[in-house]
Amino acid sequence: MRRPLVAGNWKMNGSKESIKALLDGIKAGMGDVKEAEVAVCVPAIYIAEVESQLTGSPIMWGAQNLSNEASGAFTGEISAAMINDFNCAYVAVGHSERRTLFGEDDAMVAKKFAAARASGLKPIFCIGETLEEREQGITNDVVARQIDAVVELEGIEALADSVVAYEPVWAIGTGKTASPEQAQEVHAFIRQRIAEKSADVAEKVQILYGGSMNAGNAAELLSMADIDGGLIGGASLKAEDFLTICRAAG
Ligand code: 13P
Image (cartoon, rainbow, N blue to C red):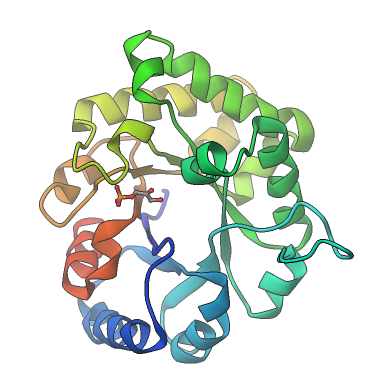
């Protein structure tokens, strides 16, 4: 059985003060979260602070991006080993904002995925189609291409110790959620695509949904057979909303 995972992606939000209040709120409500694994992916500059606040709690933490390079003259970049140094469990790779705003293509995403794994971090590997691609009817082709880029570099077994996040770009930060049926259809396709190479990996891999998941719509999305949790943006910035989603994943 796959355990549900609910991961917050804070994106470029927060301050020392607001982060402390948010984590205090989440920690206080974790007693009611029975089933789900819970994690927060935080701005890199706050990782040390988050580590000190979450060590000893059931909540895991992670980064939102990493360099594909291991070390050296790459001003401003952060390596997988550095992220690992702060006991991060996860790092998001290939988020659509990285792909569209920072020009990360499939090949770069695959390299980052490899760098994360080489350091023992679990990638949260983000895929998803734009509105234009959905309207053209090529959603499955797009997610297949994104998955294949990683599988070609790292092999299918690599997905066994990573997490896939299906995030339709048109649903991110727009308040427009994929319907549970729409999301389930793509999740089933993703699992099928993986199963063509390894039924065992397909059965094990957690596939999260992301895109305007909130306290009101989470239960219905999370009840779908192939939706194993959520990657939560806006709603992860409010302790009560995030906890409601974590409880719904039970
Ligand atoms: P929202 O939940 O704000 O739509 O963001 C989703 C997302 O991009 C998570 O990575």
